[in-house]
Length: 545
Image 1: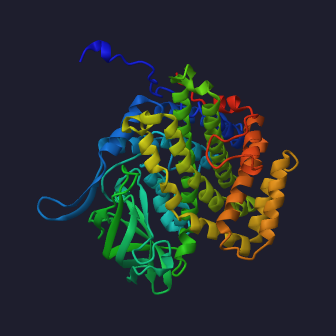
Image 2 (image 1 turned 180 degrees about the horizontal axis):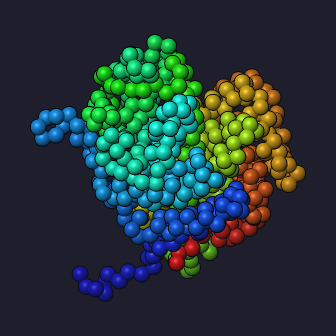
């Protein structure tokens, strides 16, 4: 082919070589807001260092390789011995190692730990989302283990370590470990109380043998797992180590890896227990209560993870429009494209601000904040994770055909987008969880209303939305059938309140006009034309170095 017919023009340079944290104004402002001055300089430095790594060509290559070479299950060695190991591409291990070294499994024991970790998780997930699963499970296992001080003393230092060591060995021989979780079974799914896995007590204190099947077991290459099983006293939480202290492999038969829509770099599995040694965590019959704090922490990570996917999708869309010319000018200067980008940016910023507010509540850890989290976490999990897929899909469309090609990275984001809405309880589960809190824990609703009420009087559309929400909350007729509608409104009012208090006026004005005031269509790009959309888009622009 003649060189003159293959001249490449009007193509957008890759979004690479930039600080993912510093370029995200909504996130960096949230960190400034929620971290006390004495800790803030160190937090900013560590997050900027992580942000530069996340925006590097190297991290982007690691992410691509980890997804192009998904994990492979090796059930037996060459001699027929059962080994049940999962092999990952080296890039997977590099991603995990970098994340652990950045403190993404350490939130519970350092100042402003949850805000620092959530911000880091949001930044690093933009490099590759799949390996976030073991990071999340490892982080979230800590509060469950703390129900048993002996177990916590043994395992927590390894879970919160900054050292990643791959491979299966006794935990006491490793400087750092990862945890997974096994709750769901074939016959019950989310209804974990219908689990049939049996736990038979041994003579040793707190020791049991498990027999059963887990339909979904996350991160099967991990060093330990929290699982639910039926003990003589009822459904109970157990710790299952992959390798026993004497170096022998525990019975942990991986039947297959799931062939998933997205999240392909991460291994999700089915496992069989057949005389599998386990240690009880908490009391018999209180398994759900024991593991519920782990579930709540992973639900927050679903919110943070979705905010990360949205942010990366919007950054790519704004970056593309900044450099791509069409119809006589840059796309970003076209009024209709600007409307679309501003609409997407609003959704992204609202998700980020809400996620970081929840993380700050974990750090504050007062009775008031715990009550607030009881409603705010499932409401945010419901709404933010559901908004992720349409946001990523619309952002992909901003790149046109280029966005539909794997090399752009957008298809991987789109495949990943539905995951967080399903993991750790799908939409109906979250909505019903909010209803339970409303009906059983009046202090949770009081805390929620006090939070949204902090912005009362600042925007008439928010005030009207709060009034309408109170009317809905007062009407309990048909409440279950209305649960999704109610929880959506709660999440939007909470986001509106946070933005009115903390975001620039052009952002809060556009959010309240569209999401709360009803001046909005049913697709992105339908914001009122009179708003300051250029400022909204400019705020979302990633600044490449």
